[in-house]
Length: 231
Image 1 (tube, one colour):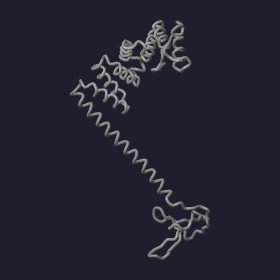
Image 2: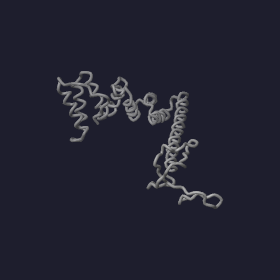
Image 3: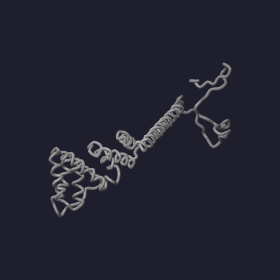
Image 4: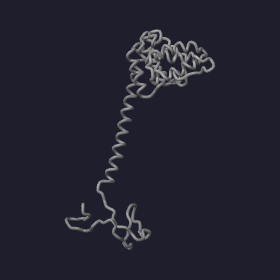
């Protein structure tokens, strides 16, 4: 009860209390979670019982575990659906929309390599679609192909620039590739075109200006590292 009175068959048989002991070493263990303090002198304490606190903390842990279980089950369900889509596409490889959906799903699941492969298949079906090519390029930025300016990545950037001579993504990375290949004049030309599209005073403008200065200084040419984006 709230006042600590223990009742049995309607009669009070004991009263719960919160006390401290002069010598806790004299307590005798009984069972797994009970101590006998019959021969130990006790004294009142200012501690108080708060009903529901232990139960409340346990409920919070159960809720957290339940949430983790739900998330895990949802992830497993999505992963199964994605694998089913991948299996279907192997028998229907000309489904452009299906490859795009699969690529997006892999990106959501954090599978960067499979996302690149799915976008590669989509780009093969739609080589003149700049949106597909842009998604393909973006997916490679999550892998070594993009971070290291691999030939596959550069090829996609060149195609994007052919569609749009002002594509800021392509101008940036192709400039970085040119500078890394000891072609500073080509890098400078690309970055000047990029700089003209950026707002003066912006972070992107400052970054491109810095690398443009490197390209224009033959003794200070170097590579842009790890997919750094000036746009």
